[in-house]
Length: 201
Image (cartoon, rainbow, N blue to C red; front, side, top):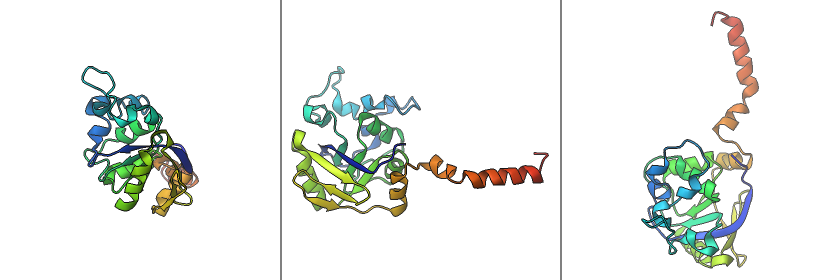
């Protein structure tokens, strides 16, 4: 997991409500446990036609958005089955921030565990950001996690809320393993004490 402090990049508008995890990464891509290579399958059923060629009408296939780092999506993003491959696919494609009015709980939690910042905004602010994202190559947003601000291409600023513990974890590159390793001194002390008290184990 990489540290998330700030991000400036092209934002792609995804004007679809209730984007589920099967839409994000279809089931046929779930055979691997590797986190790399899944970007090719991101939104596969929308990105590709039945013959395997690209669908030119899908936003991430448009020249301006091929290297998008931010996704501006409609309500209830990440619903459906609890597949961690969904944030893996987003990251592998290059997207490390998703902005929506609401997220499914499991997907939301999985984002933080994998270094993606999911930002919840009001419908009014989402409309502004969606309008910014429709500017093609000029659809650049800047996200500052420390300040909890999104800055648009015209300089407008939108504040967002985030749980302080989750913010701390992203800023310090701490997933569940990282949090556990911060207690390594206590764990080692416990193991040594346990071994001394119960040498037969």
